[in-house]
Length: 412
Image (cartoon, one colour):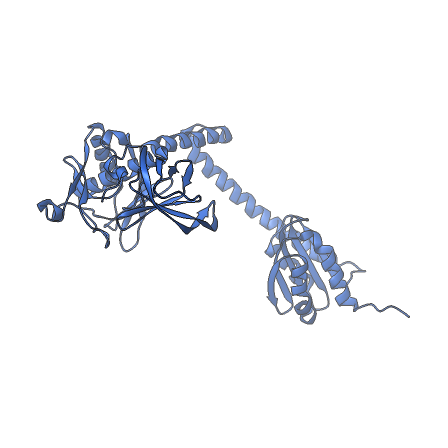
């Protein structure tokens, strides 16, 4: 069975009938938040919404005024998940989110074209592909692909686009002589009936269930962004097609314009300017670490030289790291002194270190971490970790002072 969206990929709406509506749940990930939605699975007499398949994501749209959140294929049926019940037997107008649909058509037809050209030029077979939200990838059965090969593929696919090559959808059966001659990675186990062939005239013929442009000119342009090392000696070729190329160019220009203002240099000098900045930052970081180490030693020596030093040394510093705190603890010595150090924001998050006699630190360390709303670990008289409530460090100081002096008792 071919759905209306497969017969006419450019159709944006369809008047059809609700066949069934049954309660269902959908596990979704909206904005990174996973949740389970309770709704309904709706089957229509026909649909203009493409169910996911062939590497292409499903469409979005509306049945009447009800948003369709997912479309999947179950055997010969397309199942639409909605949040509101629909009356079986009722007539409904189904509308597709055209911008999403046309984007998918451009990327999917672009994949077919790249796959065919990579195969014809170099014999690189496509083993899988993924239509991503911002870019798509084609897995090629080759361990490497040179820059010259990538450029040749890109040049030829765009030449075919400029030649306005037609893309024809044909339907054949498994009894046709052509069935075993067209390119295919295999049909689904539950497939039955005729097979759709996407024929880029003179370039490629391939079994596919997806939606496609009717002429390569609708692809506008294809840009191959590069390649990445794939799994099992394969190469992933990354590409964008059509409107995505225009959006990519706009984003790149925005970044270029911002960098020109920040770096006070033209586009041709951006890389050199950033490299100079990186070297400068590394040098400053190295000098800063040296100064922090020197400061840590001086801080410890100042405490050790104090004639009336106490058994508790407590210090908070906004700038610093674990090395800074450990140097202070090592320099002071913790045989008979408890050291409580924190670095980071004085009211929110940061790092902490407790050092001192093991019998005290092993006992108060976990309690201190709890007070600071953090986590830590340690052994042999040293306990350190992360804190989320640095504003509570005064309470930790009280806990440590009590551990040094022992609990106070009130006279009767």
